[in-house]
Length: 461
Image 1 (cartoon, rainbow, N blue to C red):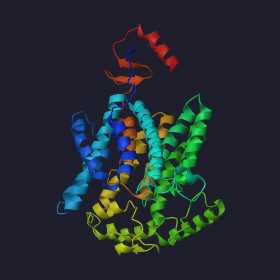
Image 2 (image 1 turned 120 degrees about the horizontal axis):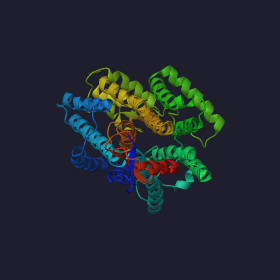
Image 3 (image 1 turned 30 degrees about the vertical axis):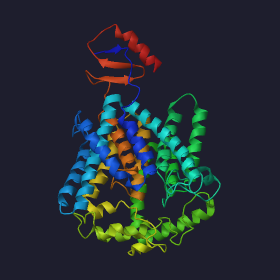
Image 4 (image 1 turned 60 degrees about the vertical axis):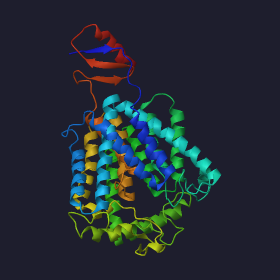
């Protein structure tokens, strides 16, 4: 059966909820501070009628997403006796339904490629506004803003922080720049024009990543290098786009809970820091707890035995260990007055809701690259690259405990990739239209008149 080409305007932009999500998670959150979560939860609740009022993905297409939802519902039931756990587990459930449902609505309404372009466009807008707001807030002396301008990070030991500099090691702009770098290297490999401009843009983004003085940014640069080689069809490199983030996540968690491995990694990091100098930050040498883990290893070693007290059910959100951080000497701050840094570890989820919940999250994250295998090779490299950045961030910095900031952005990006691979409309879907170029292809009865138009269409694309 041939396809009938109808020359109707193609959908050029995603629904309004996608820009709202991007701006809310990357711009308004840093502007409004830590109390912003309660307002975003109201936004998620308001989205539920839109999400549940439209078709939802079938369970057999995204089974592990439904398994993740079921794990959150079970955590809610198991901790009904704790109001804090009920509130947090309930907000997790609402947030996942809202974010995943909005991502599916965008992909179904406009198509995967249009949703990706819209995501990239609004990430650029968010980053530009973040630079502008950061300069203004620093200039007026806003209490939570950095006390230096963004450009000072490029010629000093200061970090590139945008909007919020009040006791934070990095801001949401780090992940925005990482995602935009992945989109840019994808364009550099797939577009035939403007290659010089894209190369310069990619170089600027990489410099900004390095200026954040984040060790995670170094891993992102490695990801971008692997993606670039994969686009050039270097043998076996496409496998590394998946292997590098997976290996990093596993190795980081192993060395962060093992004293012997942690010491070895720290010595190697110190040697590397001496070789590259101070501009690229590998170890936090300005602090007493100058390890490559910045105290995460100490906290993980305390979280691991706590998670084994109730390995199946978890201790809930009121567990004392969850409020501890590290002091200036690198020890667990059991005394809250001595706490200098909060805990950042994905193992907190195992403490809260048990190891089965943690295992379901791992399975859900690991299932996404398997679903992405259905995509064309070049699009697959982009989506797996974005997935890898999210997984590396979750493994090293924690998250997925609430979806009001970067974790919400991670889940949105992951769901857009997942639904684009499993639920997007395709050429061979009878009766469904698909945006393609400037026209829509609609499955219809055989019609010899469409052969010429379709040949012209394929020639122009």
